[in-house]
Length: 215
Image 1 (cartoon, rainbow, N blue to C red):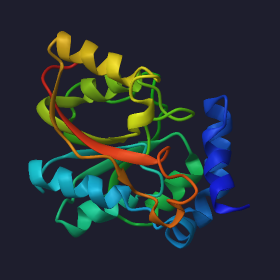
Image 2 (image 1 turned 45 degrees about the vertical axis):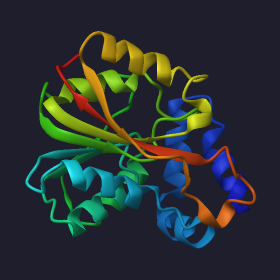
Image 3 (image 1 turned 120 degrees about the vertical axis):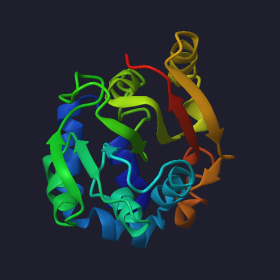
């Protein structure tokens, strides 16, 4: 499968069950293929913003963690209280091999998350919220499990920010006092090896919001 087809393959699903199955299938070669074929660096850029705002002793939830690429970068920067969840058991199995996480769970964004309210100081999600992946409704669950005053750093595609309902969801959370945008990077190509194939569609912005009160 070619590099662009691999991305389209995982982004073209119609159900969470099929998305989990495809990530299970990809899990064992995911890290090596992202590096070889894409030079993916969205997790690095996200952790850079995260580290400017969150202290290393914070209790962190890695949302839609995949194989744990973001957690690895967090650990390098001294974070050592990291839990995670993902909808793919195969990806979680790879993440567990890193020996970084405390608690690992299968959870699906958009469905109730099996965590106590205000369990974490901060959350991070890289390459998670998008068309064919986690929906905007998944933000409610993250807001609930992060303590008031905590941060949520995530990547978003500017080209679908409005059309996929993320802008409206953000405005809703701001209006009810649950969310405050703190920072947002300029759009950047986080797949540098495929910029000629996907020049605009896969540009991403790193956003950080402060969570004001749980949903």
